[in-house]
Length: 110
Image (tube, rainbow, N blue to C red; front, side, top):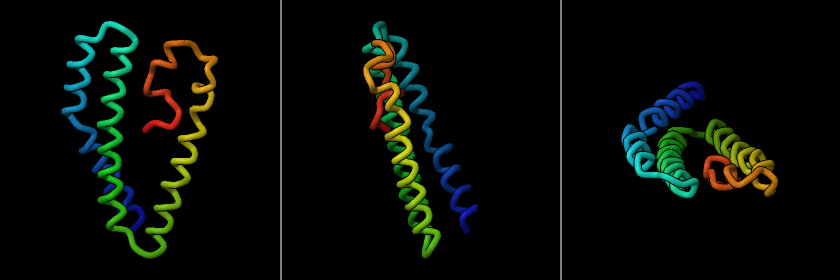
């Protein structure tokens, strides 16, 4: 059951990783000229990807029951805690302006 859920979640994320997001990102980047513009394009892409991941999570979690549901929730919480701490290096203000303008490296996002 756990492997089936993992495969299902993976397929949902891949399917939901949005062909439209790539087109929207490409279109945005064609007109972007500054770090701020690049950050806006990247931020919008990350939001679309995050929304797709959240939707996949909700669909997958509905399929889980009993201990599998508890384990899946615990793993999601552990991942969130890791994500929040893993980008502290970039959020400490010592990494330069390019890193600060990148939504991909902003702590607490996504």
